Length: 239
Image (cartoon, rainbow, N blue to C red; front, side):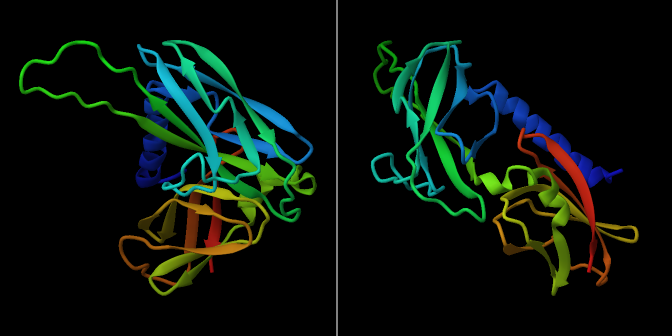
């Protein structure tokens, strides 16, 4: 079983998911796996606001400063702009352009959902002003080559963890993007929470705890997110 610190992280993830499920325009899942043999897929969106919104969609490589007219992602969302009434559902089409992508690893892109609420027609009193709040959310679009389709759920179990000074270095030797939602270093009775991270294929990443580990050895208990957006638990020896 995980300690109270890591159980708290899991609870936080659950609460965060619940908040997202009751706010704004939401999607049926938290990520889309786009397999190589697919030319298109769809994503169901629903407007859980009590008012209609205009939704603008685009896909980029994760740059928060990117604009719809400057992105060149190989997957295109259609329609790019549409109205969604309160409580209405709509299927968003995602089309693959055929652009050549790596065959030996996954490629990651981000779907942007930018919702614009209607302007109020109510008159303002003297000296008052009105603020219109727009909301932009992002979700992962993972392009997966055909040769990788069968082994994705085994990838997190291949992660290795090593002590590097005051940090823990995690090595992802697999061709998959792995979302590390939370982790905990255990050394005897000591429990050190480690930060979450998105681990690219064939890459190393350092996780720095709030205080230096007391020993070279130990165990890392971690939470990762599967293709369905569900939290899974694993553990590995710290070398």
